Image 1 (cartoon, rainbow, N blue to C red):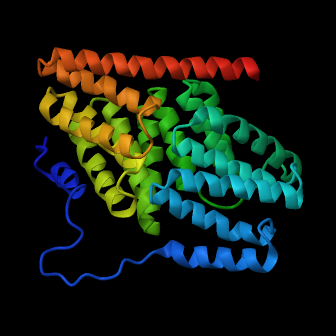
Image 2 (image 1 turned 135 degrees about the vertical axis):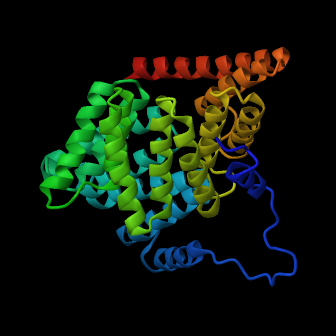
Length: 346
């Protein structure tokens, strides 16, 4: 296994490296969201702030905000899209369902499953009722239902949703979308069906590479790396996670939670073969990124703290390990209380 001085160390350095090499001629950064922002302002002025013509502008602008780690702004744009779609087409319309699904997906990407689930359920029901069980617009929503089920530990339901999403792609005359294969691979891996899971994930990775979709490629690399990690195939997992990390750093905002997840995975890889010092570096980087972006009070950070506590314990830093463990339990207990409160309200 390679040392942290390799690709992973280069990724760590990239977090603080200057924006241009010495002597290079600086170029004005290209902001792809600027044109969308101008188009949004012009359309608002011409048609009003609630015009449905804003929807095709708001969607890509929200995606760009998400990629730049501007999570609050991305969420606000998705919520605005939902409000406009409901006002223009009705709360039981396909456009409203699509806006619900898009907001749910954004919550899932932030690991806010409690916020995502009711939206994904309602979007599923509306799309089935209005468009039919085999409409292609239903496939990504079912894949998101599977992601939520995996996060809740309901592997059986997750497999059902994932298989339905893949079947819809096939019924509509095409190969399964890589996102659906990625979810299916994750479900099969969670069920210890490792060969089937790896097959689905490798197919997803091949599709993403063929399309040249860098961010999707990073997600498939990370998911395949996670599958190997679950099987203790650390030497095979490491280069996949390293490549995903470098892609994400090239294409996402500096404090993006997906980059934090990459470093979390690197930490787990280093921790397993008893490299606690390297693990601690990667895990602390993940925590620093989450604190800069998503904030401290979230379960994702708590899970990283638990793993960092293991690394610090292995290094003999008992006081730090105990402090990390206590803080992680506090965050997770608060999250459990919130889930119970929501279930009672529902």
